[in-house]
Image (tube, rainbow, N blue to C red; front, side, top):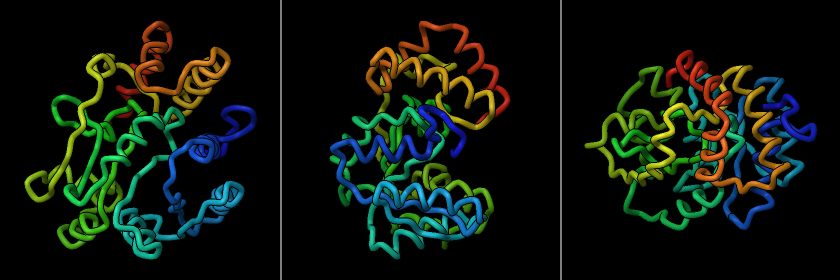
Length: 231
């Protein structure tokens, strides 16, 4: 998150900057850990005027619950800091649809797989604090403490879930991988990001997907990394 990605800024800072410069008006809370190295994330957040919460490193679910409770938030938009190509228009659309009807709202493939389980890297998810508390009392399994919303979409009968289908054209680009898990991901996405900015391409899921599709050498690298890092 801190390695120079574009114009000497890391992915974490780039995401915060894009949010700050967008018309999206939601409170941004950096949910981080007491690790010494994570103090730098707090400093960067302060630079953009964002609040933070320091919570458990191992139990991410508890960190989310405690952060939302502290800031009195009923709905949580989860933005992962390893997705530099976050589609802000899709995020704005999601925020506009938040209401009391759903425990969990996500973009998903046509087979109801939430995009958080893919490598697409464009979309966020929304979950209520009430739903997270329900997860916490329903299970103590480590996988559900680490992957905050996994229990919810693994138990769809226990929650009211909305799956917003993604563009079929993007979904069919099966090798598309725009999230960072490895050094190879980082190096490739750094090149793609610079290409997008220099060519003034919009940061929309469809336009970026089409750009990648036109560059088979990128897709080959993505395919290789996806096989090594199945979500």
